Length: 172
Ligand code: ADP
Image (tube, rainbow, N blue to C red; front, side, top):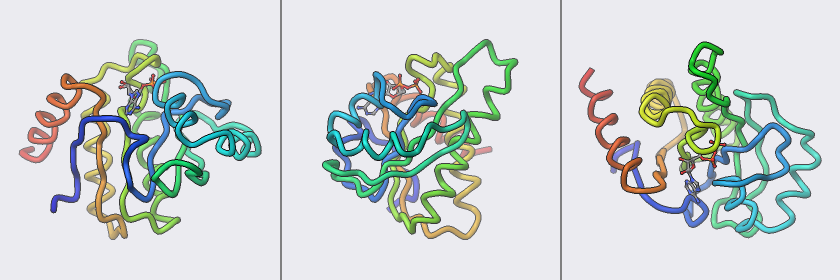
């Protein structure tokens, strides 16, 4: 079994220890993957999120998964794409690093990531995908209790891109 897996589908359906939410800084829910996670987890998730009092861009906070098959939800706030000269790359990398560090802290063995910032936050998918794979690979080179990291692609285009990039990053 490969440590990194690329999947296509709905992240809310996955039976993993933790799923990552591409949240906004209020942590009070939104559209896209955030909305889907809140709908599937139920109202208790929003109640716990309220107590967290928001999250800065590039950072991450953890809650329980409630009605989700996943035990935990790691909420991270990706950067809004503003053309690339506003630290977007570093902030996105930071989302992956902070999410993985939190996962490690909670002894998570299996974790699934959506393509953070690539929806309404408009981060170019190809660039985001390279950052995601690079950061996860870097993290897994350290001693880690993580056994599996899944990139969940929403649609065939994202899936093809992740598969191609995975190969490129491995070869370089
Ligand atoms: P952001 O605000 O960070 O851009 P979005 O939720 O708008 O977050 O989009 C992030 C990515 O999540 C997009 O690539 C979108 O296609 C994908 N996505 C949306 N719903 C789901 C879902 N249920 N499971 C997995 N990925 C999803």
